[in-house]
Length: 346
Image (cartoon, rainbow, N blue to C red; front, side, top):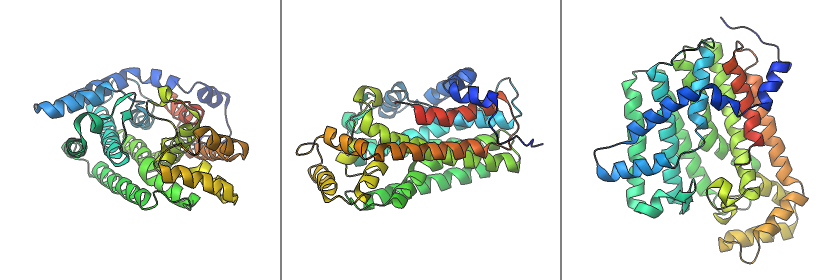
């Protein structure tokens, strides 16, 4: 039975928001099982597949997607402790496989050289093999999902994959344009990032035995948390370091992708701002214009902070989506994640 929880912030919820990284500790054993399962699923009798699988697994990652799925499942199980069913662990591993597949394909499209602090798959094995490895990851993930015989889950993954592919196509269609609008960018963000977050929390709710209200709440939570996550990624591309990101900074603009800080800067209407941004896009490099010059512009005109503020708004929407979900330590952990997302530096 669903219990209504006051939308006002309780002291417990405030503590949860301040101690966001603790959500990993709460489900440490679950994530260890996910990691082991992921390693076994990436293994193969085919030498080349096994080698790339180990390369990808050893690179690690934030693992926030499987964490969201696990927490959603435990939240919908009434906060019960004890070992999670293998179906939950397996779907968490599947979501990380699908996320990894998107990264492999994205690195080919972007001609990326680094991923998670090590050479990307396309640099190490070439584009042809990388395309097929990304396909293998997708097909393996769907094969595992089919074994679960849950058509609700399969429908969600099919829709998610289509939406993400469409998001990539939309992004490629506007690549290099300095006239992209906020609405267009947010549509790309929803499709390429947020729909996977939404799938994680909704699938977690399904395999966790959620009722209709819980499922709807976690779906809304995941969508907004995903948008917040990507908007902060956009900000970090300007202000973080290569050591922290595990890939070159300010890469989006070099690749011709304008994100909210620059979209809002162009909207201010200063022709000089437009000229500087266009120069970087045309050269695909910070040569005539330096990264520091662009960073100074988005900082001085407040568009970097405006993007952060928008991310905070989506983070707030995510936490508000859980207002009607029965309280537990796992719900508290979910409440902490949006703040963790907007305050992170990597």
